[in-house]
Length: 347
Image (cartoon, rainbow, N blue to C red):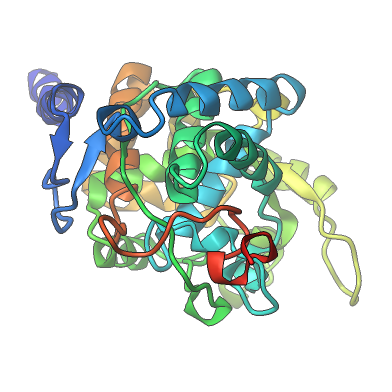
């Protein structure tokens, strides 16, 4: 018991120290962890007096959206992940085009674009050509997470927007990947095992299509049987929601990733308790039990919402620093879905 408690303290203390450092430092080189140093600042727009109330404007629009559609938090979390894990956090996922990132098969069902566009319109009216779409996405996601019961963590700002977006560059992991394959993917983005276990915890809210779990329900690894790690009652419940797809054009319903959160879209630690009870919906989530380090983190977060909150505050910042554009790189788009050179309003 004493060793277990000591292990939890060792997990907890590095997070607490780093979050405190993030809270105190105005100039960050994002050197906390594995990323290349980037010149992002806390309160970037206020510091340079270019749009001192930018974050307040973003927060106000997110609150309006949240009141009418609580699923916006899950949409923004997925949108942020889909942006940062391709070419970096450069808002390339927001660009329209016949072969842009948002058209990739892996990005089917993405949402949240309308809210980002609404926020951008407000900011362009008040501070034209100043606040990047990349920063708007990060800030809006943070505010939505907080409204759902998660932490209100600091976002370092000063990102600029990318100029290109290509579906061929999208290589997001399958929800059926093994835990070691998933970790290798996270490592390739400069993130570590704690980040992986923490960011998968975003599945504590939101929904997924049945196509992402049909292998677990009907033909696990070619056995024509369900995943043996799933509880029979969970298989039975999900099969009712996800009938086996036997013909082309059959519907592909949505199911909640965490039924305990469900339509409330509540940010809780219950996701990790479900993993421990073999009740995870996605295979990639259930596999958190299959490594000692990820099992330890699952136990820690299942036992403490506060530890989960502290860890996601850190990991969202680390993910938000992946290959960001700063200084003279990229541009500040005037419309998030179009680069400035293609924007008819600027001609």
